[in-house]
Image 1: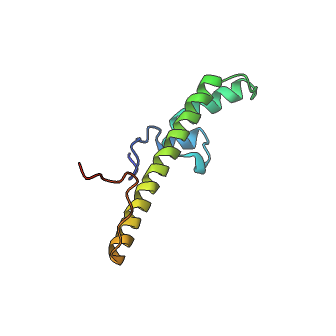
Image 2 (image 1 turned 90 degrees about the vertical axis):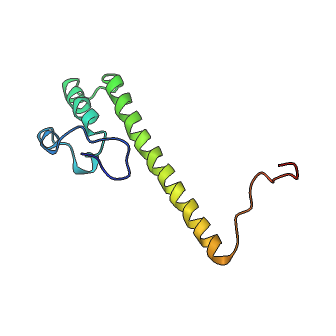
Image 3 (image 1 turned 45 degrees about the vertical axis):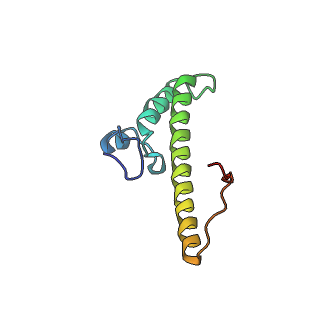
Length: 102
């Protein structure tokens, strides 16, 4: 299952997430990493120095999802600014001016 607008695919199925009691807000493309992390946390009594590799892997996945969404939003804003400028007959000022040689 792939969500629109995301490059990552859903690996964990709904049944696996229900069985692992993953809260609904955490059922995203990184849920397949959260399931073993939560099992490790329960087995190790939530000691902060345990399960570090699992936690790092999960947090990196979440960070990549956030960065992907930020880039998508930035592209949408740039497109809207171009459309808004084109409607008014204005074009954005280029950051690097063109020289006569170019």
